Length: 309
Image 1 (tube, rainbow, N blue to C red):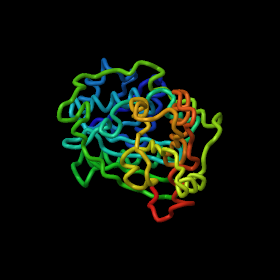
Image 2: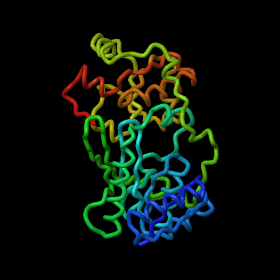
Image 3: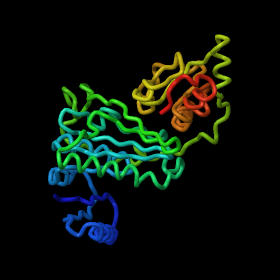
C-alpha cells in the first residue's frame, strides 16, 4: 500500500524530515511525497492515486476541496478535526455514506469561526484524533470492522467521553446528493471567506446568563432564543422554544429574524454564539445578546435532566 504525506504549504525539508521519522517507525512503508500545494489543478490526480485519504487539514478551503475530490473520484475520506478540548472524527465519501457537505454544505462566512489562536487546542488532541483516523484508514484498507460511515464521533477531553451521533446521507447534498449541483472542483480563493474569525466576544456587553434567561422565561418575558449549533447537537439537548439556525446558515437566514426583537444566541459553551451575536450586531440587530456558558451551563444550572455531550 502507498501512504501519501500530503501538504498544502510546507517546504521540501519539512516533508523529508517527516518522511524520515515515518521510516524509523516502519522501514517497510513506501512513501510518496508531494511538495506541492493541494489545489483544484491537481486534487483529482492526487486523490485518485490512493485507496484512502486521511484529511488532517486545518483550513476550510482545503477541507472542502478534499471532500469534493473524494466524492468525485470515489475515495473514502478518514476525517478528523480538533478545537479547544474537543475532537471529531468520521469517514466521509464512502459508498452509500454521507460526505462532509452533508454536515456543512458550504464553508462559513468570514467572522464566524474562531481561530486556534483564539480558541486554543489541547495539545494531546491531535494524537488522539489522529490515531482514530489511522484506525479508520486501516479498517477501510483491510475491509474489516465497522468504519465510521454514517456516524460522527465526538470526543470530549475534559469529561473523557466519546459520543457517536448518527449522520445520515443528505439527499439534497450539493455534491453527493440525488441531484448534485457541484460536478467539478471549485476553489474558495477569497482569503476572507474562510479566514479565522476575529472574535468580538470580549468587546460585547449585555451578555445574559442561563439563570437570567430562565427567570425571564418563567415570567413570560423571554427573548427569541436562536440556537446556532448543528442539528445533530440540537437533537441531543436544547432549550425549550429555541429556534435552530446553524451558525453557517445564519447569513442566509437573516430574513427570518426581526431586527427590532431581542435575540439571545446560544451554542454549546458560548464561543460560536458569541461570534453569531457579534455578526448579528454588525448586521443591525442591536438587541442581540449571547448566552454565557451555552447549553452546558443551562444543563448544569437549570435543567440537569438533559444529557450532555
